[in-house]
Image (cartoon, rainbow, N blue to C red; front, side):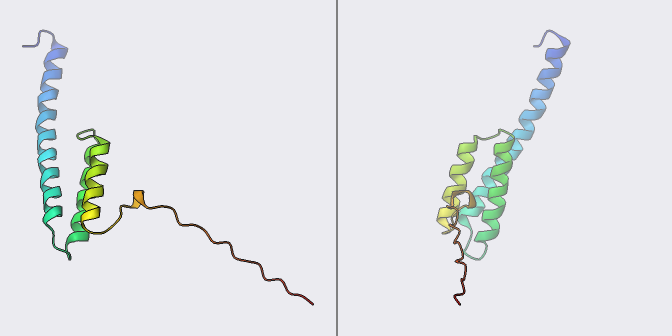
Length: 102
C-alpha cells in the first residue's frame, strides 16, 4: 500500500491508465487481425484503419514505433501495396528548353 498522498494518487492514476491501455491494445490487436483476414475488396479500407490504429498506439508509446512500422509493412506487403514511407522518391525530369535557330 502507498504511504504518502502522492503515492496514493499515482497508484490510482496507474490503475486507470492500465485499464485504458488494455482496451486500446485489445482493439489494436482486433483491428490488425481483421486487416489480415480481409478480402481484396475490403483490403484497402482495413489496411487504412489498421495503419491509423498502429500509428496512434506508437505515438502514445503503447507499442514500440518499430513494431508499428513492422506490422504496417507486413500488412502492406500482404496486399501488394508498398507503404508510403517506404517508397523511393520519384526522380524529377528536367524539361529541355527549346531553342530556336534563325
